Image (cartoon, rainbow over all chains, first blue to last red; front, side, top):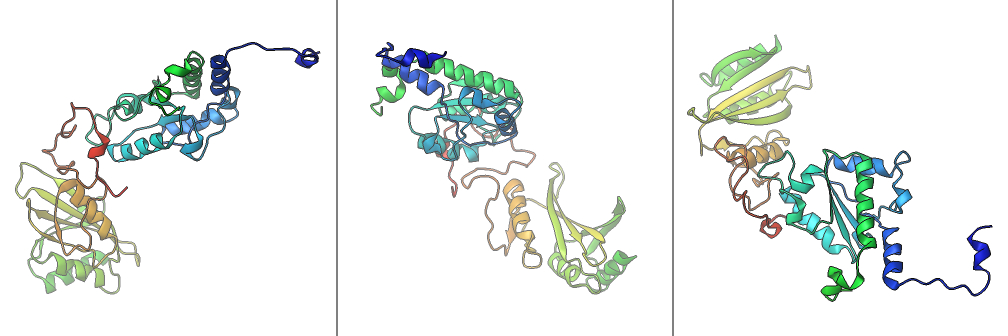
Length: 167
Length: 166
C-alpha cells in the first residue's frame, strides 16, 4: 500500500548526516513568542487556520527563548527596547535564525527618529528580511520558506556556532 | 454657571492671579500668573460644593521664538458635576514650577513626562526622573530646537550605550 510495505525486511536508506540534520531542522523551526508592534498581529494571523503556519512545522511558538530556533523581530525596535531584543537573542540556544519582519525592523521604516533603531541588523545578525508595512501573512510564510531553504543548503561545519566552538 | 462662581472666588482670595480668561469649545480657560499658581490650584481642588478633584492631563507647549518660551496646560475635571476647566500658565526656560503632585497624585507621572520631553523642572516633586526616554538620554526631544533624528543618527547604533533600569 504505502511506505509501510517497503519497510518489511532489511532495507537501508542512504543519505548524509548534513542532509538529515538540515531536513530535521528545516521542518521544525520553532519561533519565539516575541512581538513588538503591529507586525506581531500579522505574525499571529499567520499561525491561525486561514494561513496555517503549521504546514511548515513552525506552529509551536515557544514562550521561552531557550526553546526556540527562530526570532521573528515583528515591529518597531525602539532604542529602549533594543537592550531586550539583544538579550532575547543571546538567550536563544544555537542553532538560531532571525527574520527582520516589516520595514521598521529592516531599516527603521517611517520612523526616522531619535528613539528608533534604524534596522535590527545593527544589533543582531539577520538571515531574512520581509518587506511590507506590515507584511501580509503570506509574506511571513514566504520568509519562513526562505529560512527553510537556507537551512537545507547549510553546511554544518560552516555554521557560525560551529566556527566559534559553541556547536 | 458653575465655573464662574469658582473663578469669582479665586478673584476674591487671590486678586490679579488670573491674567486672562476665555472659552474654547465650551470649556472655560484661565491663564494664571506664576507667583500664585500653587495656591490657586489648591483652591480649585478644595472648592465647595464642586471641587476639581481630577487632573486629567498636563501638557507642555514649546512656542520657541516667544518669551516666555513654554505654555503649561492643566486639564481639570470635577467629578461632582462634570465641568471642565483648563488652567494655562506661561513660563520661561529654566523657571521653576511648583509640582501639584501633592494635590493630585495623577500629576506625578504627567509632570515626569513633561519634564522628560520638554525639560521643564518641577520643584517639590517626589521622583522627578525620565519616564519615557532612557536614563542617560541627552536633551529633551519635544523641544522645537531638538533635531528630529537626534544625536549621532548617521553612526551605527550601539545598544550598550543605553542605560536604563532594565
